[in-house]
Amino acid sequence: MQALHKHLFQDVFEWAGHLRHETFTFDDGMQASMPAMHKAGGKDFAIGNEIDRGLQSLMSDLESRDFLRGLDRETFSHQAAEAFAQINSIHPFREGKGRTQREFFAALAERAGYPLEFGVISAERMAFVSIAAHEDRDLAPCVACSRKSRTPSASTRSRSRSRPLNASGRLRRRMSRHGTAPTWQRPSRGRTIAAGSAARPARTS
Image 1 (tube, helix red, strand yellow):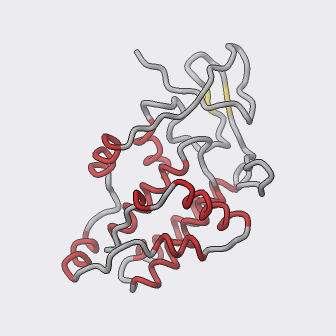
Image 2 (cartoon, helix red, strand yellow):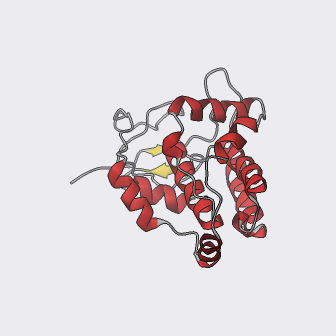
């Protein structure tokens, strides 16, 4: 997932691909980290090393289940929803988590033979799904979103079994259609970026 985040945001953030609790040093010597994070009035996301452990546990679990391949549609919907909710609670990146999460699950679902199209789900619906999963441990809305897929044909299943979980080509095409425009402010030189500061963009030549 870190490699995917770097691929998506390498031209936007200097720290693309780094987990939020890692101390990152910018080109001018400033450092930043965000071990703790939560939405206003909400529960904390994973803190510090919980981020690493959570991601490693999730990926090991997905690997042990063959990345959800060979499942019927209903089982896939529930297991994908559980994994989606776990990443939501880990919240591994300061910025870009949602985009990375959607691209990861689009690739996961495509490989499993149940292509997902997040474009049919509104931003408001995605926000509701995320809050329900993290704050209330309610996976029902997430399961409903996971069901927005088509039943795979035999040929789709056959192709998906041999295809690696690598969607870089598709990601490039998606990136050309969906621009990313995060908001940031440049911090004062010589200071360490505080936990609540806006993200800093990558430098451009």
